[in-house]
Figure 1 (tube, one colour):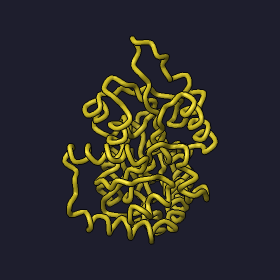
Figure 2 (cartoon, rainbow, N blue to C red):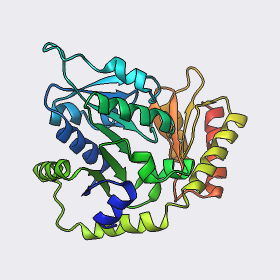
Figure 3 (cartoon, rainbow, N blue to C red):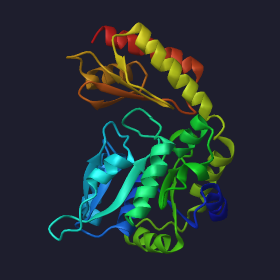
Amino acid sequence: MTCTEKTQLFGKERALFVPSGTLSNQLALKVHTRPGDEVVIGDGAHIANYESGAGAAISGVQFKVAGSGGLFTATDVAACINPSDYYLPQTSLICLENTHNRSGGRLFSQTDAEAIGRLARERDLPVHLDGARIWNAAVATGSSLKALTRYATTVSVCFSKGLGAPIGSALLGPAQLLEDAHRYRKMLGAGMRQSGIIAAGALFAVRNNRSRLADDHRRAARLAATLAQRTAVTVLPHDTNIVVVQLASGTSASAVAQRCRSAGVLVHAIGPSALRLVTHLDVSDEDIDRACDVLSECLSTA
């Protein structure tokens, strides 16, 4: 995908190709903040929980959680924005995640996102959207990428995840911010002179794999319904291609994940008693049947 194609899809001035969504998010933190600043995020946000503490190490920022379960409102954000007193950290950025990974691929309400965008403009604050799975949100809601991201100053998107490219993400936003991000990308050792082979996979994924995301959502829904019917797990609310299940009290998620792995089904323990299951282009209807059988057996012996 060319820079022009990316910016037309999302309505942003510039796009910067990067190896990973983590780097894209961290570049956004770097260009929007100064050391000591505070960033408003949702509960369980990827940018704070799954990026090796890079926000503190690279940009020197701290995080304040708004709302619960990963989703939040403009009212929640307003309560998190610090007054401009010199002894308080300066609130300098609001970060949203759509879809929200840890809560089970949940969709961030567009009404809430737009309201947060209006609040941010009133308070002269930028908004960064971690849109690693924004393609899933677009398919699930029937909305355009431009509509889903119009409130955000910068947007991180991922070409692997559900789209299935082997590697690659991008940061989109205003030209001057992306110029700064380009410099920081080089500073962090992520300049890619031989990026054509990586970009080719991303281009193929965007042009060929977007419409099939609905199949992942359908399979995830069937997986969730079957597990809820056949096992004692609690299936958390889900909207797209991620299913999070809460196991019965005393059941070890890591032990169940290991038993599943031994039986040829990969699941991820995201807590002492919670598993994350993700559908993608390498998972067929037959694979869903197999996963349900294996999980049912492993959970029955847990």
